[in-house]
Image (cartoon, rainbow over all chains, first blue to last red; front, side, top):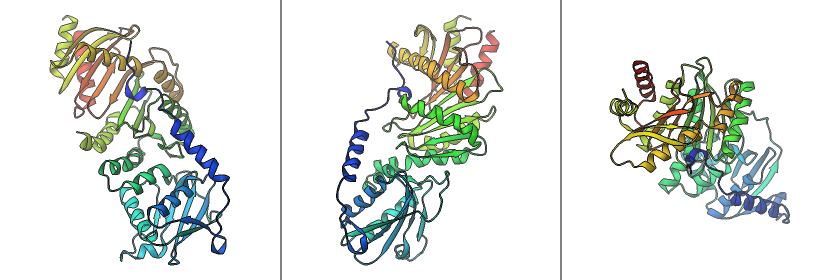
Length: 280
Length: 126
């Protein structure tokens, strides 16, 4: 009887995803709660309002712009697509910290600083009263490389930021993205987010399409368990002119990376530099 | 040099080496193993099972798809599995189809160093 390694175990139970889908279908059937100016009530204050914002993102497939307004007539604009937050325009909220640095946050790589700034702004925005939301078409086209942040990562970051374990988890998927960005000059990579959402692509897009196929197969085989810490699997042929195929995963986010001959050590060094300090 | 002497030498010379297992991929059988004193036969069996999975049909098929090469059982010559607590290198020795050497080291050990020692030792003994 052989034991399958953790990186290749069967996929985890999908019951939670099915339950999410049922909940979303149920919400589609609910009557719209009309507020002033045609806007819908989101709820609030505090955590209820934040949860309402996250639900709006969670229910978004086609690109749209969400305009939130609180009882103080402050506004918050979010560009969302495919259950991901692409851009948050914090408006006057960004000026409240006195620096003016976070007026607009482009959330492509889910950096810990971006998430912390967003959390602080949302706490101020949702502190009192109820929120209302209205929807408009997206005001601009977004590129494939503009991946944004998944709603799953946002829920972790905004709900559990005070829990150090959760904070590490929230930043983890971004670390895989960062790793691939660092490797980009050397490799072709396809990164699949832990929520199964859109991807980021590095290098030749035509070649990367092959990586898209294999990363899906790898995830289906259980190679990207959300509960697993960082792991990497590198596959090499005896034929020296053929490259190395690598799978780099952490907490459900997985990257398939095609590494040219002679670059494996450099790529692995970048990976270990990111993860070894935390795991040693 | 006997196979056990060969494995003992690898265990001694590779930095922070935890175990060296020699096994048969087809049957999933450990033929010989050398490791730290706290490791048991079950640990060696588990390591070989990882080698079977990492060099098995699914990874081979994925590799063949990406690089456009035939996905035969001998397509993959080696696999490296890096986890938080350890790194394992699974290498098919040249001329020994179906066999595999599994080397497990501390996560801080350079995989390039492991590969170099494996190759060097193999060349000397051949």
